Image 1 (tube, rainbow, N blue to C red):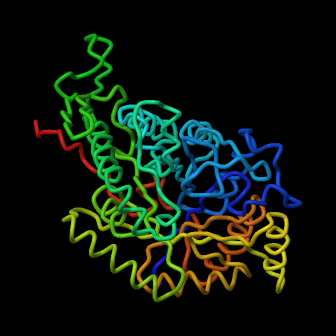
Image 2 (spheres, rainbow, N blue to C red; image 1 turned 90 degrees about the vertical axis):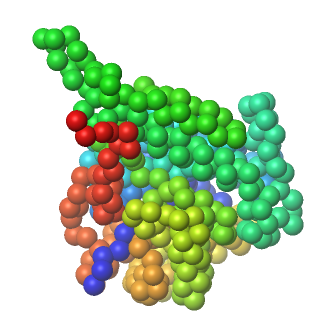
Length: 399
């Protein structure tokens, strides 16, 4: 049986808007390093491939396209890249994949931040590039305007992608620039020979000379080539345009099917996107996202969800399928969808830490019992967990 990959998406108190009011939630600790350390070490205890850490350039809202003034939900977060760097020395195997915005953040700064995380974690860094889908975010920077989604747009992921088409093009340029910067130091550019006084070999540092429609970057990076060479890049996608962005630019894509048949349909669209953009090298890894609320007692997860819904004043909704039930039932679903063409899953715990523990202490043992998940880490880097080779610098020349 082919082993599957498992990741968790960490966000505040969990993906249910009322999760911070659950009896075992820790709302007073959301902005402490200790809270996040507990979550990530729990994920590593479960042998998961990686965690993702959400981020945005504006306060969270209940709407995809507009800010709100609600005071009954979690608002505010820590910087994801800086938080991941804090968590790196507290863990030893699990991958750390922060989100970083590519619409308003300079690619040079992203490249150094993620490369530094890769150094700090000894090869466990990843990155989720995210475009700014809310026009109001631009006001925090005052440098440019971005498209305003309408209420009609947000009902259809294809309309969203069409409205944000230029930003997806820019995002591709940003990822390409970041990858070039990561390659701009050859692996052996650092000599560190105190006797001769030569610290670096200047011939092994390269200008990258990226020139696109929106920006120009010359390089080289200020950060030496990191342990993975290129940290793993991931993205979330719901329509053809972001599927093509993923096929062109990233290593792992998260999709949001709701049924087995949709897994078949969407994975076929992702494969078509790879053909359309002429992807070369390793095929795109395809993970499905699911929101999960787990309890083994019959009806307990549904009851807990109903209580959270009552606190929120509305039923939980999501772009991803919402699973409430036992770990054994979730294992059935994951293996059924895996057989439809997926490489793995990114699970979004409904409430933290409750549902993360459900994943690590009940789901993982159930999958291990079925021979579908690792019983120990067999690699030390995130690329190693995912079976991805370490790329050579594109600028290195045989000498």
